[in-house]
Image (cartoon, rainbow, N blue to C red):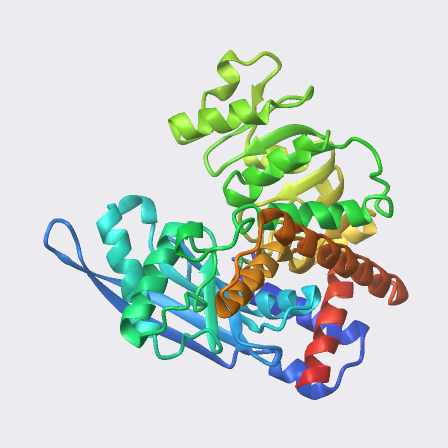
Amino acid sequence: MQDPFSNAMAQLNKVAKIKSFGDDIISRLRQPNRDIKVSIPVRMDDGTLKIFEGYRVEYNNVLGPYKGGIRYHASTNISEVKALAFWMSLKCAVIGIPMGGGKGGITVDPKLLSKSELEKLSRGWVEKLSDILGPHKDVPAPDVNTTAEIMAWMADEYGKITGDKTGAVITGKPIESGGSLGRDTATAQGGFYAFEALKEKLGLNKKCDVAIQGFGNAGANAAEIWQAAGHKIVAVSDSKSGVCNREGLNIEKVLQHKKATGSLFGFSKDERGCTDITNEDLLEMECDLLIPAAFENVITEHNADKIHAKAILELANGPIDSAADEVLFKKNITVVPDVLANSGGVAVSYFEWDQNLKNEHWTRDEVFEKLQPMMAASANKVFETAKISNTDLRMGAFILAIESIEQNQ
Ligand code: GLU
């Protein structure tokens, strides 16, 4: 399996073959402006000192301050963070916000830390990187396993170190700490707006059977949003297990079970029509729309020819590698790519940053009234660009993004 950065570069090489850009822009996008590794010492509850490895990759800032989340995961490494930062650069360009691309991370399983250890680690990451962060320099946000509470600790730490109390250094904060209404569900909501804009073109202008891989912030909110719009959620899974019901799952009940027990395991036992399903089987099941909402590289050349969905919408970053893209394109399975499909998260992060700098507070309705037309316009532009170049939507999005960065550099 390709590591995420090799996959990102394979995508870049592919777009450079499809469309002729100036050599400079492709060369510039082959590596980040800088990648930084830091050691973060944390005094653990048992008195021992543990050193964690943290990262920030500042990929490209032609369009504005570096922007992108921070991931906490045991397998997070600099290559993954570099890939995610590259995709952020394109994502911000696709959705048309004045932000560049960056990403951060810490190699840690946060579930193994106490709350106070997690707070020390999060504050430690900011302490080590405070020089390069700033509302007009580099603006982090949440990603896998990082919460609004963690963002609040980080914003507070940055304020203590620098005196900047606007909160605009970081987005995805709790509302009481300057967060934006709607940020919590923005990734899934934005994906839904993109789906709505494209569904006719994808032949999905009907009630769809939807399978969702990943039941964290993006996946769980997507399940609620698609269900509320009348679609049938036929399967969901998290890292440990999954549940399936061809008649449609009751997502409210699934969420209650997950909240009470911490996993989806055991849900199907007492539910009529429900069976357990593995992650692999969920990806390969017959459905109208498959939404990968967890990690990179879940659809590769090993399983791409077994995918039976009519279309795929990537709420995760990088879930399909470039070899699998080729297979899916030939099978006529449309992929709504991550840099478009999950850009609602960073779009509302941009709204939060804007509100912080202007000291404004928008209502949830105002936020979504701004997000919907942005997502729809970007989705349509991506579709048209792909059509003109006779390529898939990912390459359509890449062409749009790279042209925009090139024109502004
Ligand atoms: N982590 C999210 C992403 O991958 C959001 C980034 C942000 O809000 O800056 O798009």
